[in-house]
Length: 136
DNA sequence: GCCAACGTTGGC
DNA sequence: GCCAACGTTGGC
Image (tube, rainbow, N blue to C red; front, top):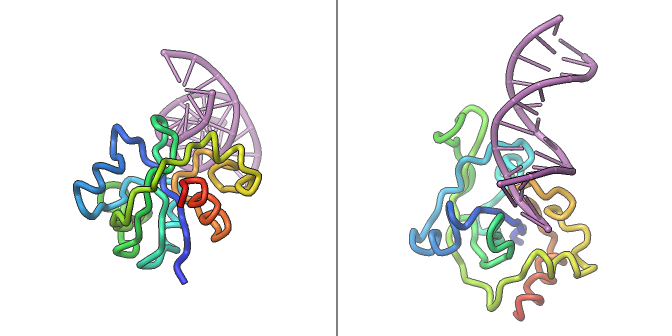
């Protein structure tokens, strides 16, 4: 059974459309111990929400892990890792941070408790709640 | 653009 | 090994 995650990116740097255009993306430049540990725990096929931070502030699509972690040569490869991801599909409609905050089922969502965490786990219950909010 | 949160660095 | 200073992230 796949695990669920959420990853953030600023859309003006690397947004959903950039990932779709590329076909497969390398999630690099994550220099945070917690986020990095989460990436190390990812297995091929795990499902990931793509969240637009700073601008947009919404979950826009679903991607999946296409290749498990390897050293991040763009930073310090001794220390940090990348994963590769592929777009699965865009959500029927984006789910905004505002809406997430208003849903009591999502009160414990990791990114609400720790807004600066850029790679965070999502429970199955939370995953389904967000999908439901997207009208799926 | 501002600032709070929080992780990291470096002087002691 | 502590903690103040600094840098980065991300919501507002």
